[in-house]
Length: 224
Image (cartoon, rainbow, N blue to C red; front, side):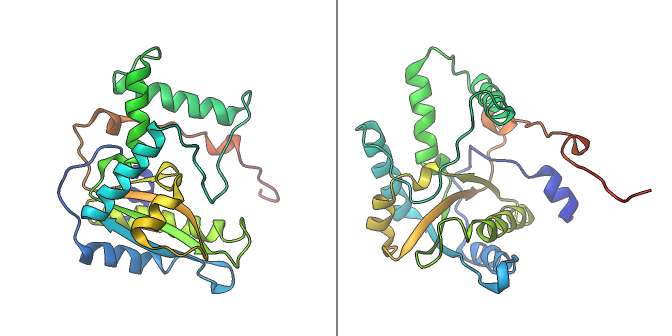
């Protein structure tokens, strides 16, 4: 796929086919992701790839803790948006579109709770990639570099017909990941990527998110 087409067409996939993704394909994706730029070539990312029984164990344990009311304890900076900001409004607009497509009324607490579980289940993707970094690095220092690697994974996945969803929820209970993946305490768990073959009949995959016009967020100086 052409890189420009990939950038324009990539979207978050929240419904997947059950078809497995081969280790060979995932290896190729991560090999390409390792070419992402990083400050002074520090390459502060580490990947843990889950599928099969290990992934099912993580899914189940995440949902059990969520439904038991155990507070999440993420090891990364959690995104938040001021209530009266355009950033919060964009998040609300996306949520409204998702809930409409998934037929989840605002007042239906049961459906909303079930949908929340999906994020902690990596949207039932056949594989998930956990990204971590070394605790010897500052909390925010590696994030730009890791973001570049994540973007590279998501764009490269399209070449193989795969979809992705970058998500926080899969890392909200780091103790679960450590139990089943043996990621050491010396590593800080940053993000998760659900990855698999998209189920294009799944309603949430029909979301079309808006983009702010470039003219509204760009200042040009010194041009004729």
